[in-house]
Image 1: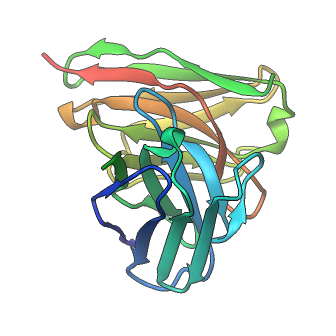
Image 2: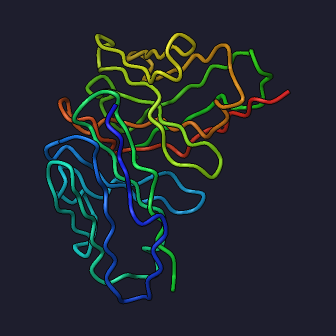
Length: 107
Length: 120
């Protein structure tokens, strides 16, 4: 099973600042990685797939990079609606696995 | 509107059974693989089970294999999860999620979830 490790667990950021979230895979997953955003009481929402492709209607301030085992989600200028928990997910090998999440909170 | 709506959650005793359902609408259900993903209270996301569009291939997480059964009825645009021999650690919100593409198993459509509580 591929273990996905996200860091940090919690990220405190001021509105308007940049947020950088990391996701590491225990073995290479090429670019078969997705990022999701989940707000309290809501279901997850797809942000990024194929490591760097934004999903439909996702603002350009969200960007993803990486391949192999190291991946990054960057939010260029945090808006109030971006404070949430972010999960990465690999779909390179079964079983599908998620990272433990990074909570982005207001500083 | 493109959506999936889960139902069937509730309180069940350890060792009991429950059947979850997911009703799909607004898209061609029989063209998409479907999944169940769960989230224990205050915890992260855990993939549970997947089924391809024609039910040809079915996958389970080790934690539920042999106890849970996924199925679908394309004529009714529905996805089910039969959960037997339930344990306390199965307590979670269960989400129905659509796979975005035939080849790549990431999830582009999620329901609001249904809560399953396993407790005596």
